[in-house]
Length: 145
Picture 1 (cartoon, rainbow, N blue to C red):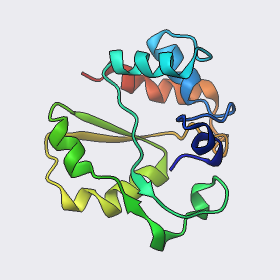
Picture 2 (cartoon, rainbow, N blue to C red):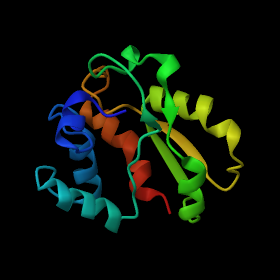
Picture 3 (cartoon, rainbow, N blue to C red):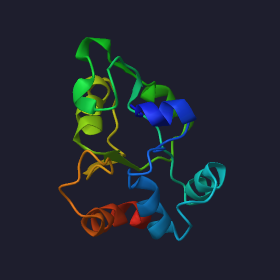
């Protein structure tokens, strides 16, 4: 689920301390500070989609650990994969996204043609890994095809 700032701005990874856009900018060779619509265009040109595992949930603040489990509602991945049959890779931005997908989506779909992988979270709440270390791990996104 997007954090409070992202929900307010209606932009993925709107918190400046989140390294998602810096990483994607380095991988896809664009300026991380360019207008949001231009960053989205760069992702689309590289055949990368960004979508939340959860359609909705309740939590106070932005931390994944504050999500109230009984309020989780996953997005319609069955419809997404039906509409986008050429998806071959799904990467999770951190452990919580992967765990939610596995718990609420994976067991309901037959997805043998899709490879799944968890990447280190770009959230500032997960600062134990350096930017360069995260960048190395995220290179797989630019190399998939």
